[in-house]
Amino acid sequence: MPRSRPAPGPALAWETLIDLGTGPAPLRDRLEGAIRDAVTSGRAPAGAALPPSRGLAETLGVSRWVVTEAYGQLVAEGFLEATVGSGTRVPATVASAGDLTRGAPTADHGAHSPAEAAKGSGLRPEYRRPPFDLGPGVADLRHAPRARWAAAVRHALEVLPDAEFSVVDRLGHPSARTAVADYLARSRRAVAAPDDVVITHGATDGMTAVVAGLRAAGHRSILVEDPSWSRLREVAAAAGLTPVPVPVDRDGIDVDRLVAAAARTGARAALITPAHQFPLGAALSPARRDAIVRWVAERDGVLIEDDYDAEFRYDRRPIAALQSLAPERIVLVGSLSKSMAQAYGLGWALAPAGLRERVRLAERPRPSTLEQTALARFIESGDLERHLRAARGRFKRRRAALLAALARELPELEVTGIAAGMHAVLALPPNVRASEVVVAAAESGIAVSDLARYRATGAQASPEALVVGYGNLSDALVDDAVARLAGVIRSLA
Image (cartoon, rainbow, N blue to C red; front, side, top):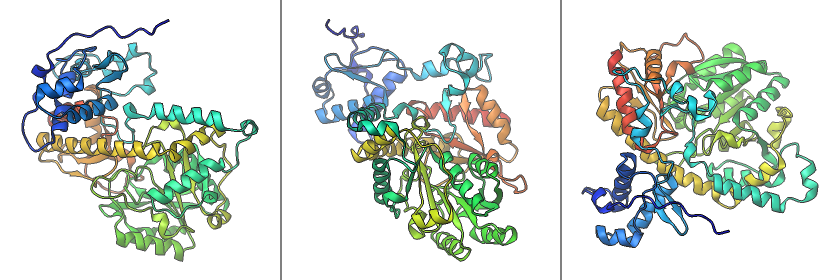
């Protein structure tokens, strides 16, 4: 039976919808922006067919390469879809900016809340993302590499010997451990051999194994950054370790105060994010990197390096893992959660044999052999690094758009954090409380976080600030999201 083709969409005079304008931006970027604007504004409705690349190039007076590059990027972003035999068109499921904002309430209208508007979506509440997603710690879910991962799983099913379907290796499948070791040595300049890698279900799982090992080795407390990601502090506390907060500033964790806290409490272990501190967004300065490595050696201690989004640096190459300076003292923990999506449920802990002899990682259920073999294929084929290159480009552009919008809408407020990762910190006016902004923003369909939620202790005074994420924010909604957030802040000032 022949395959059915999509019904033809409305015929449009695209040359009347596309204004390339002028300016220093490359033609390709200007064409992308013009098509994206036509789609998100609703002027190009769902199902509308785009002209063949050659025809549009002739009409606009540009090279065909410019058009094919723009089409390719917009297909990758989901603004367009390309089907063999039916050309390139606006997807039937595309949502314009108007579609996304139409149900979001404003201060002047008694509209339903985003949760109420989503009741008919079929999603459980915990899976629903708000229309304007400025929440930190969420990957770009629209660009999770589904097709390439599916290909990796199919390959794993084809090559796995029958006997390997009956067992899961204690530390991880050899192919996955080899692929991860090679990747970490290549991309993070870590000191890594296959035997040093333990495959985990993610960073939290890796942290659970490490802190249980620390507790069994006699540790009773662990130094943690303040502020920091609360989930990993909770994991440490659940294992019987007392978290000891150490302040963070724009050079990363304050190592002098870390040394003082260690002397006061007897702590010989610390959990840090040196490449890109969460949530303040600092990189640990070179002087402090050297100082903390000296401290951990002198104390015969252990550092846990949370490498949660170190692949995403936009002004320079990503800084090398701290682990490379003292591999016998540092456990490097990473995952696919921020680089791809949490749903993949895969990660690793890098701990050389000598370190594992002193801190025996607790036995944990490992990911399935099929998942691990797929991970190995995904890395070895180059798909992971191709995905990361594309993601870096998207995040760099999105961050620039976010900062430009914040400077335009809230020029008096300071934005901090290095050019990295998927979030920035926005200081608030002196008379505005972040907790109130979060609540009011939610009523306008905006997710954003209060910096205070990541504090390890309430004793340390801090200015009111928001942690503004852009990982899962649609490019088309950056300006609107910031404008709405600015309106909320001004209404509370």
